[in-house]
Amino acid sequence: MAKAAAKTKAAEASAERRPALAGRAVSAPGVKVEILPPAERISLRAPEASVAALSKALGLTLPTKPKTSATKGGRTALWLGPDEWLIVDEAGNDPLADCAKVSALHSAVGISHRNVAISVAGPAAEVTVGSGCPQDLSLDAFPVGAASRTILGKSEIVLLRTAADAFRVECWRSFSDYVFTLLSEAASDAAN
Image (cartoon, rainbow, N blue to C red; front, side, top):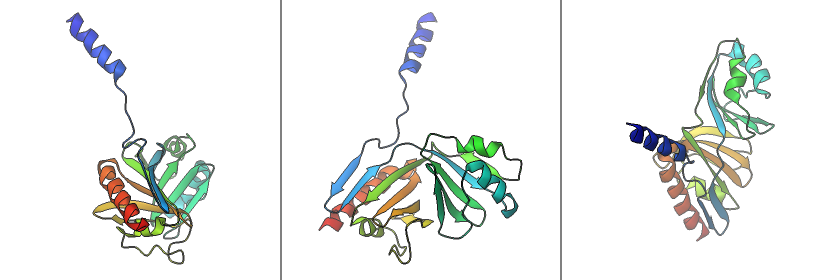
């Protein structure tokens, strides 16, 4: 029994959780597709009456218009619906803890473990993402800061335009290999 306990303890000590697709990147002429570092994420739902209190707690103004986002201090809030946001914190802070301090009605659920972020950047980024996304991604229709829940191929994603030639693609961890592969193939095609 002591041997089994020691073996279990040794196995636990060596267990390490690694981010999905960590370190994967593909470069093609005009575009680079790469996995972004882990970030803290929450799914936030709240009625209009709670938006001001949550905005104050999160340190940024929650966007209230379709296809918009707000960024401040390494934290981004993406509007997903009239009462729904995806909050991404890349600065190492805890948005879930910040929301827990708010007494106004809301629901905040940690989803950091569920999502993976992929960067698509370069002059061919729009063509690369557009090859699998039915949404109009022209700068006029989808300007810098625009965000939406959409699809890429057969997978649901949340898309954020971070620059004129760059996108952040958020997808579920279970679909990340499919999404990354689709974007990699599209990057190769866009280069031709």
